[in-house]
Length: 241
Image (cartoon, rainbow, N blue to C red; front, side):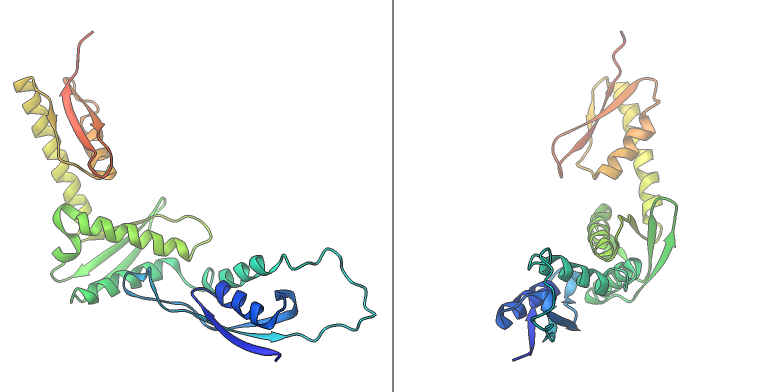
């Protein structure tokens, strides 16, 4: 048997299984990737594994000079390089993230479009379509969750870290203005009542909006307390020295 086809969750797994069945090492076979692992809903769980074909190479004549430093320690690293070449570099990470968002929309019964806008520090994926409230969720919680997953997926296809911000119907800017107005209103209450106010749990990004808005306030200051995901902003009076 000089040729075998094996499957696995990843290309590396499939290669490892084939090498075990052939009883050889990777430097003695040619590997042909027949199928890439496919992703399911949310792009995180594979529906179909990878499939590879391993073919034994013709070995040199016994008289050839051996190379002592070439051992069987190579299989893992070369398989990893192969998987990287077939995934990273061949697929656009932003297109993969956008495809994921469209797939989620389809599973929600929505027809959405995703526009990619590259910025200096991050890339924005703007979602457009009808009834996007489902994808935004209560106070943007669903949008935040999708943004987290989109970043995971995009970085799977990039050899350097990239940051994606997910937006829909300009929700991020509208939410920022709402939080800034809330911060000013609650700061006024603290000044009037002389009692501190604790806000509801917020994401790090939303807490930052509150802190930034009130950082130069003459009478109040802010700080955060609690553990994620229940960390909250507290607005309290500044104490004079």
